[in-house]
Amino acid sequence: MNRRLNLKAWLLMLPALSLLIAFTHWPTLKTFWRSATWAKSDVAPSQFVGLENYGLLIEDPVFWKVIENNFWYALGTVPTSIALAIAMALWVNGKIKHKGLLRLAYFTPTILPMITVANIWLFFYSPDIGLFDQLLRAVGIDGPNWLGDPDTALGSLMAMTIWKEAGFFMIFYLAALQTLSPELYDAAKVEGAGPWRIFRRITFPLLMPTTLFVLINALLNAFKLVDHLFILTKGGPNNASNLLLYYIYETAFSFLDSYYAATLTVVMLVALALIALAQMLLFDRKIHYR
Image (tube, rainbow, N blue to C red):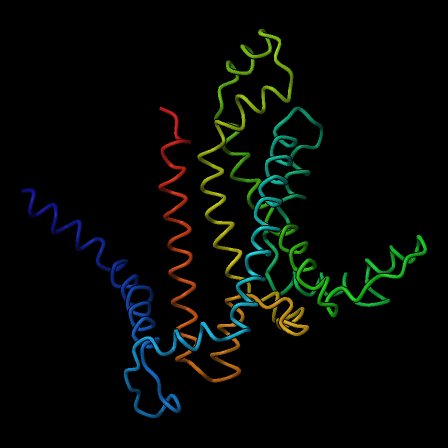
């Protein structure tokens, strides 16, 4: 009986497993293999070169610049998006008027296509005629070249990402807040605890499982930006806003070097896997309450 049930279970999972293997596991294994080979072109026979591609990667100054950009991009977007998401969730979970409209307003940037968001912010950042320059000119300030200046290009991308992602993360926090027992807050108020103490001692600790989930997704998103870069800066000026995934795309489809692109992809996959694993191992046991 158990064997029949197991067989039925595997048969039910077979379509999903087939797609998972065909479009996830097999391409991943092929990418690892391709990173260890090289050929003059994609149509020429490839030869095994071992870690030679990784040696080229270590000597690539653009790669290190991209890694630095990605570090600052993640550091600037992830904590800010999470903090804003918590603040917005607390506000729209309270007793305020037009709560539904406010939730919709916060969530609207999330449902917009990435290309649409990039074009909206391209208008905001346009020199002279853009929204930000117009607002600054109204108070007598000349706006910078937001996307054309190496000092502001990456920060401009960060602002756009925070605007788009904070509302998405808010939904998870809002759902978590609605599962918390009101009795905890009533008991805290009886003891004379203020709003900040209640948040610090009750709300935030109980939101930590949600925060771990959001943190992992936010870090993964920080390494997946391509669409916005393609529309806004194309990694410029002088790689000041170039990020790892866009550099992979550029290497594969602009420079037509799929072998080096595979090497970069392996580095990104390993880095993301280590980050997610470290978060789960270091924080998972500390933040789940039983």
